[in-house]
Length: 240
Image 1: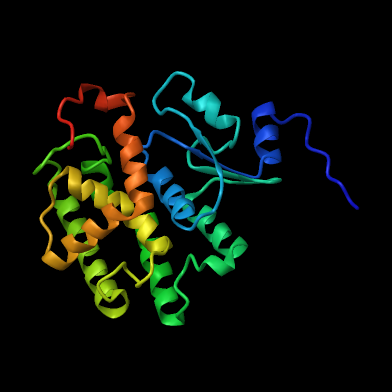
Image 2 (image 1 turned 45 degrees about the vertical axis):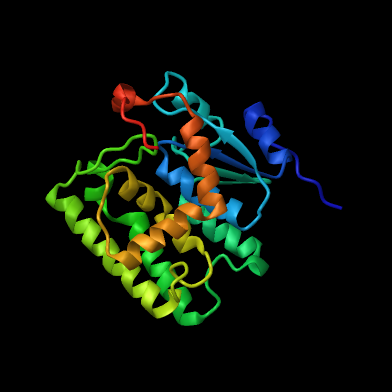
């Protein structure tokens, strides 16, 4: 049987993570939208993992993330000898490793569209991201309505309407919960924080998302956090 020696130059932290199975490194649950996506996907599909939470905007944030990835960002998935440091790459890896869990829709057309809208979410919507940063603990209705953010809200509404009408059947975007829903989960939280008014069918989708056990658990743990980060140090309005 062939054995592989672990690189002795690696940090002990990373060596330990590699020995332990799947380890997901994330930021604060209140703020880190990128971390929320693979965490929700893994939790929703019952994929066991060890969670490592690194507080953002702290003096040691960069050095702690560097123990797992030279990219300097979260999330990071440590899977045996592999390190995967992008949220979409993490989810694609999980879909390959756990095909029986059907992280993507099984229907070919639905799967193609699910990958398309997930990629659009992954690479786009800069106006929404910059004007309406994720902050689950805050309640800021009406804020962040820049023209760019409004345009992104309109496009996201179009995506949800098409997915729900073609494939969702009044459940999740493609019927069963999928990676696509996990990727839009932080948007649902932004819409809640900033009081975005939606058509009834889209608000119902947001309500179903917030009620999903994986999303609800992330939110409950975010609400328990007490740390603040960067420009969020003045938090006074807490979401119920």
